[in-house]
Length: 231
Image (cartoon, rainbow, N blue to C red; front, side, top):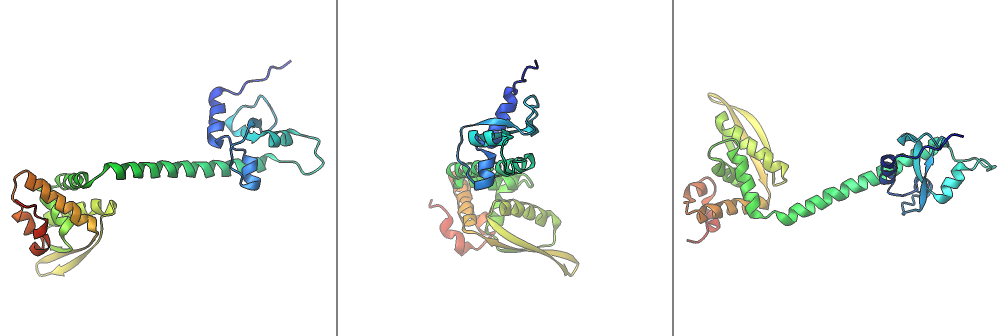
C-alpha cells in the first residue's frame, strides 16, 4: 500500500496565498471572487504529485465536481482550471499591488510637508554643485533661461529632471546656434508647488539669519518680495 504524500506546508501556503482562498472555478465561470471554504485539488488527480503547478484551490462543490468521473456531461478539464487559476492570480496580484502603492502614497502624503520638500530640493542641488540651495531656488522660480556654458546648464537640467519626476513641473530644452557657439534654451512650466517650495527655502535661510537679496535677484523681485519673511 502506497502512503499518500502530504503537501508540504510551504507549498500549501503558496497555493492559499496566491488564491486568497478564492475558488478559481467560481472566479473563472462567474467572476465570483468571494472567500470560499474549499480544498487544494490535484489537477492531474495524482494525490502524490504535489508540485505547485499541479495544485489549485477549489471550493468544496467544484472540487467534488472536478474529481467526479461519473458525470455524463462534458467534465471540467485541467487546462480550463489552469487558465482560471492564472486569471485569479492576476486579479488579486494586481489588486494587492495597487493597494500597497496607494497605501504608500497616502503615507508619504501624510508625512511630507513643505519643509521636507524644500530640503529634498536643496539636496538635489547640492548633489551636483556646491551652491545647491541657490540652484534649487533658481530652477524652482525660473520660467525660461538661456545658457551657453555647459557648467551652468548641465546642473540646471539635472535639477529639472528631478523636479519633473516629482510632478512639480515640465520643461523643454532646445539647442540654438548663436554667435560663437551653441546656446541651450530651457523653458519651464511650473506648478504652484514650485513657488511654495521656493518660499520655504527662503524661510529656512531667513531663519538661519542669511540675507535673501542675492536669491531674489535671480528671479522677478516684484513676484518674490512678499515671499521674504518679515524681519
